[in-house]
Image (cartoon, rainbow, N blue to C red; front, side, top):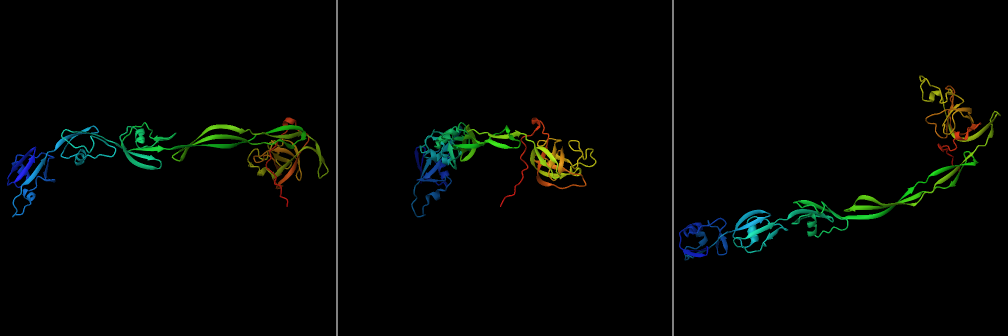
Amino acid sequence: PIQIQADGEIISRRTQAKTIDDALREAGIILKPFDRVWRGDTPINSSESLARSANNSPRAPLATLQFTIQRAFPIQVDDNGALTTIHTTAPTLGEALRQAGVVIYLGDSVTPDLGTPLAPGYQVFIRRSRAISISADGRTYQTRTRGETIADVLKDEAIELRDKDFSDPDGKTALKDNLNVTVMRVREELVTESEAIPYDTVWQADASMDIDEHQIVQSGVEGIKKRNIIMRFENGREVRRTIEKEWIDAAPVTQIFSYGTKITKRELTLPNGQVISYWRKIRMLATSYTAATSGKTRANPTYGITASGLQAGVGVVAIDPHVVNLRSRVYVPGYGLAIAGDTGGGIKGRRIDLGYDEWNLVLWLTWVDVYVLDPPPTLDQIHFIIPDSPRERVPATR
């Protein structure tokens, strides 16, 4: 004997059907897709044999098999605008969606609530959240949101942008799935830098001082320039420096030298007893050369011809014309009288190159006093300020 409860009716009958499906068909009950068959509180497969369901021993009296047919009913699901129909026998909306394979993520919105008991004709609305990756304050994590912009998701996550903080992309950017958002914490520091301002040096002529005498009239003092700089840090990394303000904290003080322009004629007695008159004495580093060491080949038409047109050799010396005027007469102790008749690429400042004939070169490398003989040139032709190089090394005293 079986008893079937279906569609609001209870049907009792006896049957020799082999399966539950056969017994239901004999009773005029047609199972539709997604309908369920229960025996007591246990769902069973309708293709199961009746004998197995009865499970009676041969000697036991036959017990009535009781079955309940639970009809599936449709519910309409709007999943972010995609419409589907689900047939279910589940007691609640959440169970119906689970059985239908509809995954609900944290952050998704489901209306009505997932715990709502179901009835035929229900309409369900699912509004999907988006998967977003957020990097903020030293950590990166995944979340989901139904917000429309990055500003919305930051608000949902209680991430506050303070002062000059910003997000990348910016807060107005529309959200899309799997978007990576980085929160940039901005810190600014104000620092003050100092920079030395070099002082100028001016020379003032002093007719009361002898030529080549110098005197400091005013010592130079470096000035100080200061600037306020705003250092910008984003997530702890310096990205920019901006000068906010710049000013002269202390102006430089010009260094003033006075130099002598007084020409005093003096006399010098040479080893041979000759007396010469000179107007200037310059300490210079002396070297020596010949036409063969001047850098020109013998095939050169100007071989042995100096800058003044004189023939290179004894009695012609090379000088820097910014120190000693070309064609000046000079006297070099140990060498003799000469004409400043040549120049040279390496003869600069306090250098003098003593000319020799090719067959009688004497090597020089020593400091000497060079006397510039009378008459002196006009004042506008005199180089009152001459270079201070090369410099003579004075041996240290013990």
